[in-house]
Length: 86
Image (tube, rainbow, N blue to C red):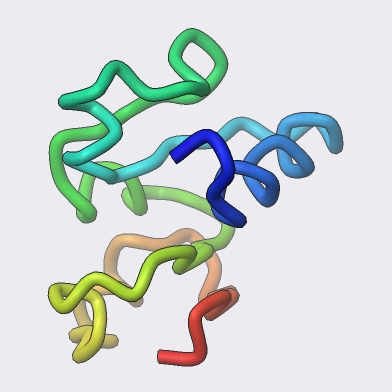
């Protein structure tokens, strides 16, 4: 995970002064290389709840067919960056 493009993106978000919440069960299991600087959530809905934007930085199967009505209800603004061309 340390070489992941997602980690690079999150590092850039942090450098820009953004608060980052993420949902990545695999990273939580391994402790996450960004532990302490990023809030790890136990669900996608918690990570996106009241967020100003959403960045999809993984191509996991569960993210391939998003429910945009649910996502719209979670987000403060409807700004989505699809970094995996899903």
